[in-house]
Image 1 (cartoon, rainbow, N blue to C red):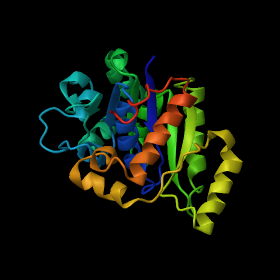
Image 2: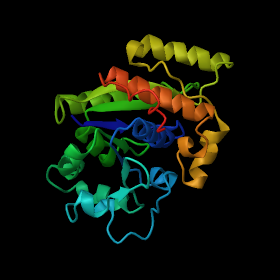
Image 3: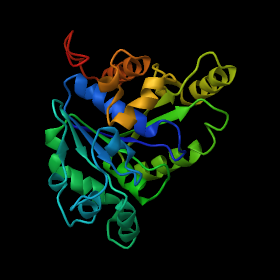
Image 4: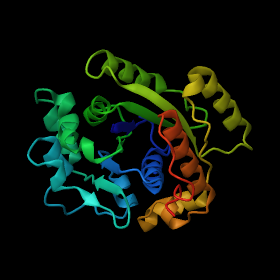
Length: 266
């Protein structure tokens, strides 16, 4: 059964898009059929896998407004089971127009419905705000993964996201749940990072993934080449961390891992 996961945090700069791209690539390397959906107007998940976010005749905006089908914009990456619904800057137009539409929270869910049988996981890269695009992602999703940087203001504002998730669970999407929190850009040598990590564990307990994503130069460099970190440097600490996170997501989801030798796409 397909799992739809929103990667969300209204705070910018926490590694949300990096997590979406590299978790998607890692799950694909483990022989899962993956669809990455980029609804962030910045379109960084799109360029991060080597696709263009400008000059498209048909865009995600058309899909969200019911003027095109998701298959009209679907991109298949070469030599990979990772497919993409690319983003574009004009998706902000969809957000404005959706506000006056009936069932405005359900447009993304409706657009993805015909694709569900084709994938094991659908990962949605959300905007860094709690706007109508993010609400559409949360209504379409089964679960939410929240990337968090272990810094002083990390927990500030998180209550707003959790509150939004709870409201959507009570109204539009009762199956929605927080799957887990991912600590990103983590430096265990930092006293502050360790202290914030302890606070996150105290508050969210078993919802915190054991895998922490380290600060890693290869992770920072990969997007400028239009590559996931697995493609850019599969032996880097960043790549190994995201493979470990993908394995943890699969375990928590009750899925068997790929056979030995296939987990890194070998």
